[in-house]
Picture 1 (spheres, rainbow, N blue to C red):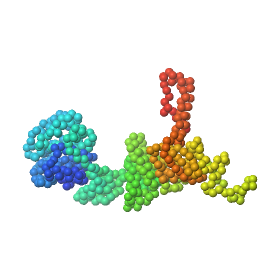
Picture 2 (cartoon, one colour):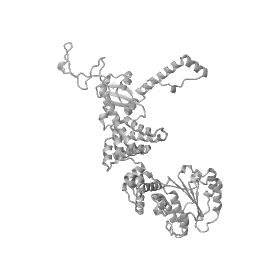
Picture 3 (cartoon, rainbow, N blue to C red):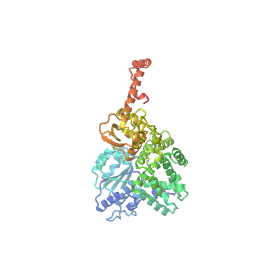
Length: 536
């Protein structure tokens, strides 16, 4: 077969052809122009960003017969052609993954003392250098520290942290970056024009995005797409190949999540999975969309759909949903069922939808039963007791309870606060936050709470929800004041104390049972508290 893959066919032969890595190229070209080149260089970075390619171009530039005072090799002389084909006597390229032993390194360095016969430098290129054994690194150290003036080491690695520090300290480190999406996309466009292949402009964006900063990965995906599309690139076929989820389905899923529509979200998720996409891609797509929405809220966007969706969701909720998706992706590989991993991610997002201020109807789903039912009868219908005329209370007026306690925040006692707090009907984050606060006092309509030291203040959304719940329950809209202090009697601490008391009582009850008591005594055992489940 005469076909040559695009990654090899369009491998850069000159510095000017390298995609990205301008910071590396400028350093090397300046060194070549001045003649001040380090004795050992190590190129690091992710796969497919140009480490070995740049090292080979540098080797050609060093031994090129026709290079002038500039830095570019001619790529036409005998030395350049031999280095390109791998047949140059003074350019030795070694794959460290297949030659890891110390004997291989000794054989390699035996010829180091001899001057090059037909070149300026004797150049050693060690690819994937982190694969060398510890003994090989030790054998290399002395030569690396004091090499002959005619000798230059070039090394490349994707895992710089595995290279010993003793080696790194003797090398000039050149860290290559992941290539920008636009640079990969433009590079692919150039290749497609040279190859005369028809393509939709959006397809190169999708391929460049899937490459994740690797030019070689991008060209490999391009080869696949060309083969899949029988010589042309169409957006529908490329999406099918890459498993890309259409924005319409993704927006529909997120809109249902934000609306708290569980049935709609399930239906949208099923429509996405019917496209036979990778389950992990669904979570990654959700993460990407949450990122786009956050950026749109901060910087705006020309995409009308993004702007509309970003304006319909609270920024704090968006951060929470993003974190839920990130956690789901982190644990995806250990989940026994990929489908369940995606489904649980969506269900977790739905569990926190009441925090969304833009959907007030959601907060109305769960309203606690008021402790007090105000008298709304007309004044003329009320009875007059003992000659005293009855009067209609205002909205903020205290309404008597059946037990004689006034329906205002002043009636709250420290001992009853934990019970009253549970009846407020707070949800999710708001419940978790305010359960950590201790009731201090209530004066008029001012409710004073105390938060632990170094505990963050509530957001405006959380505080507003708390005040609304208090108004529904106490029939008075309180002014909430939060002070900082030593918290010892918050609802969460009281709840924890009750749980511990129940646990201890259960353990004592078990220990008093004759059979269990005899088993514990025979084996000198104890009952593990974590093995016991108690009701709160």
